[in-house]
Amino acid sequence: MSATRLELLLKRDRAVVLAAIVAIVALAWAYVAWLAANMGAAPSGTDMPGMDMPGMDMGGTLAPALRGWSVGDFAFMFAMWAIMMIGMMLPSVAPMLLVYAGVGRQAGSQGKPFAATAWFAAGYLLAWVAFSMIATSAQWMLESVLLLTPMTGLGTRIGGVVLIAAGIYQCTPLKDVCLSTCQSPMQFIMRHGGFRSDPRSAINLGVEHGTYCIGCCWALMAILFVVGIMNLLWVAAIAAFILLEKIIVPGRLLSRAAGAVLIGAGVWMLL
Image 1 (cartoon, helix red, strand yellow):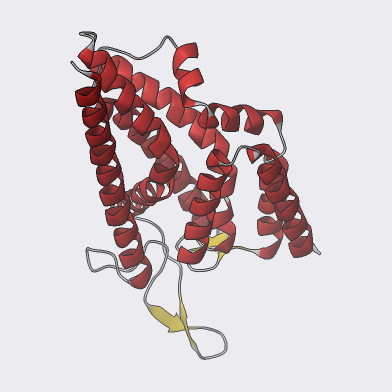
Image 2 (image 1 turned 45 degrees about the horizontal axis):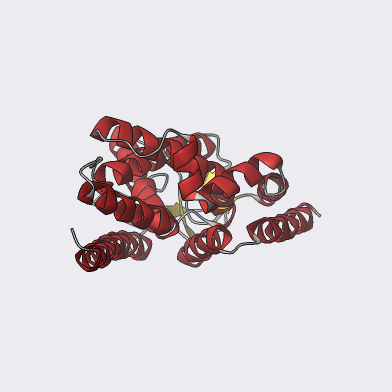
């Protein structure tokens, strides 16, 4: 295959991967925005998990009452977390997917093809789905003991503790390792045996790198428990910060700056 033809194919592959990422992210964000605009009703016609029909509070005014989750409620919230994770995380892993697609095309032209990019991306999806299950379970437990309300998040004291914990994590060596791995996709692949030729191995590689991505941002996701899980402004702000943190070279400085801000905000809430 000529160099010119290979270059054209690589450009086409990049365009296809980017178009797929943009389409998926757009659909995910559209769904999350729809949920935020319709917080009062789930698709089944029931109230939002954790909320009940308005009742009279002690002052005689209308106020929502908390209720327990059903199996359907848990499934609904799990789907919400999973879709929200896709919308927030996919832009930040786009460079990795583009690298995989480009190297895959070159390997194929040399008669050494490996698993398609979609299999590698599926590994990320599995990691995000696993995190979504953990987040949904945490939300369910916190609402069950009346520490979390669906609309406003955690109370002031617990919220302050969560922000301080998230800020401290931003400055830990574990955060540095996860961030460094996310910023150097090719080094990660080489350290883990290179590209894989079969789908199962490609999925496992995606899961491994996706786990590092979660290690990089899980504390930032915890902020949503403080400010409100469906607060779209904060969802967008956290997604933008996660992307910047991974693409800016001095990402550690950005992480530590954010950590200091979170610690300060947590102390302010406690005081």
